[in-house]
Length: 190
Image 1 (cartoon, rainbow, N blue to C red):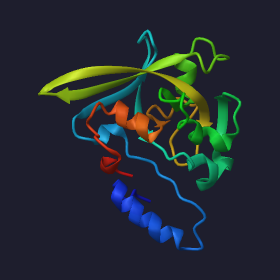
Image 2 (cartoon, rainbow, N blue to C red; image 1 turned 90 degrees about the horizontal axis):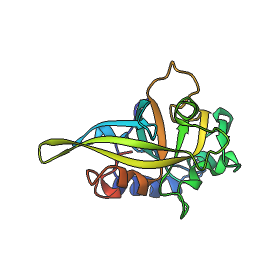
Image 3 (spheres, helix red, strand yellow; image 1 turned 120 degrees about the horizontal axis):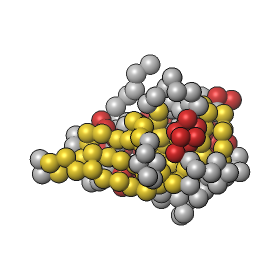
Image 4 (cartoon, rainbow, N blue to C red; image 1 turned 90 degrees about the vertical axis):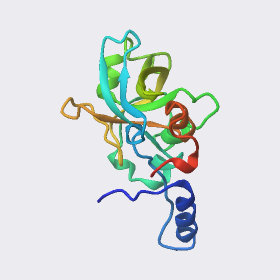
């Protein structure tokens, strides 16, 4: 199926209808990739030394996405900080997680120096944004809160056949990564 383009206000109205329907237990959100917005031309995940670079689709996810919304039998965790699978998307919303992302294990294995130190290893989000007619490269340091071999709803993998993979971040982190191209939650398309 295709995605339904929603903004935050429309999503609130949909939530109102869904909350009055007994067949719906819960719902969550996945934003479109950052590159879909005007002024964002490129998005990559790169190692800190920038010796390896991978194209990504950075997407905002709701805190409950992998808790109550999706079937977690499709989730295969390669490495995490020891938390339960159902809390992986929720962890992106903690006070200490403004620089956190959930990434595919293929990328993790490529940019990590020490696979046993998930919390300490970092990578960079590299965005090319348009600023007054010029392309500007913006590097944002980040860390993985989990590396997944597969995930429901998002394209993450351990295999190189899926070269462009999704990266999950919180809605506030998504706004920050957009470098002002997405100004508020109201402008996020789901």
